[in-house]
Length: 322
Ligand SMILES: Nc1ncnc2c1ncn2[C@@H]1O[C@H](COP(=O)(O)OP(=O)(O)OP(=O)(O)O)[C@@H](O)[C@H]1O
Ligand SMILES: [Mg+2]
Image (cartoon, rainbow, N blue to C red; front, side, top):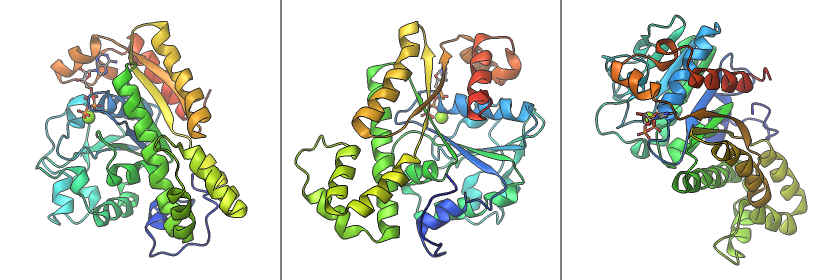
C-alpha cells in the first residue's frame, strides 16, 4: 500500500499522514486486525500472529487499540500492564516507546489499551495521528494493531494505515454481515479520504446525489463517477484496486465453514468490486479457553495443537511465503 499513486505529498493532509506513517520510507510494517463484530477472535488472532512472527525472529510490538475494552494482554498471558495508552494520550508519558511491556516471548512487546472509559470512537483524529506518528520510535519490524469491534472512523483509519489489514469473522450470518459492513465502511472511508485529498468533493457528491437505490454498491458508485468523469473514474478504480483486505474465518467446525471464506471473496469482487484475500481459517478448539483460563499464550501452551498449525499457515500466507 505504500505506493499509493497519489499526487505529491502535502504534509498537512490527513491521508498523507496515514500513508506516510506507512510510506516507503518507513522501516517497519503495520498490520491491523479488525472486524465488524465483538467476540470474533481479533485479540486471539493479534496475540498469536504476533507470537508466530516473534518466533520467526521479527521484532514485534502488538498495540491494543481496543480502547475501553482492552484485553490483548490476557491473550498474551500478561497482567494489566502498568502503563497504558491512556498515559500517552493524556500526556503523562511523552514517548510511545515508554509504554512497551516485554512478554515472555523474546522479540515481542505489547502496548496495552486504555483501561479507563475512552472508547476509540471518542478519540480525536489528532490522537490517531499522534499514535501513528510515534510508531517509528518503537524499534519494531512489525507493529500489529488489535482494533476492537466496530466501524468508527478512528478504527477505519487505523485499518487504512496498515500494510496488511486483516479481518476476522465467524462462519455465521450475523458475523458475516458485520464483516461485509466493515468492508463497505472501509471502502467509503478510503474514498472519502482520497476525495478530500484530490479535492473531488463535487464529483463524488454528484455521483452520490444521483443515487437511485440504497442498496447501491461501491462498484456502482465508481461506475457513476466514471460516467461523470472517465479520467478520474479510472484513477479512482486504480486506487481502489490496491485495497485488498485479508480474511480469516475463525471457529470453523466443518468443511462448509472453511468454504465460506472463498464465497466471501467471490461476493466481494462481484458486488463490491473489491479484492479480498482469504488467508486461512482457524478451527474451533477448546485449547483457546484452556489457555486463556490458565493466562498462558495459546501458541506456547499448546504448540502441537491444530490451531497452532492453522496460525502457522496464516502467517506464512501473510508473509507471502506460500
Ligand atoms: N478458534 C477458537 N476456538 C475456541 N474459542 C475461541 C476461538 N476463537 C475465539 N474463541 C473464544 O472467543 C472469545 C473471544 O475472542 P477474542 O477476545 O479474541 O475476540 P475479540 O474479537 O477480540 O473480542 P472483542 O471484540 O470483545 O475484543 C475468546 O475468549 C475465546 O474464548
Ligand atoms: Mg479483543
